[in-house]
Image (tube, rainbow, N blue to C red):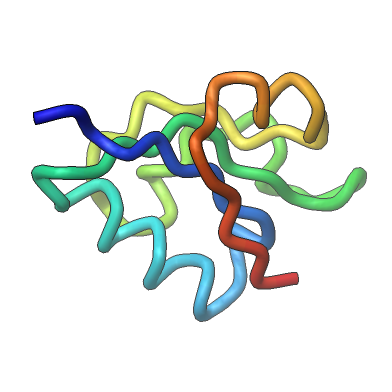
Length: 77
């Protein structure tokens, strides 16, 4: 089964963190990008750190690059 590749905008907020946790734990989905606004203290950190899980995806501000590998974007900004 092919996993759905998901990008999340607003990753450090309450709902963003819930989405991160859900996607990281899902067997049928893969977190491929996490976005925050420029100047956010979370930019450059592993997205999984926000929820205490191994994520392997660095939080970025580069939406175009992040969306290149995604099937869908969940925007909680």
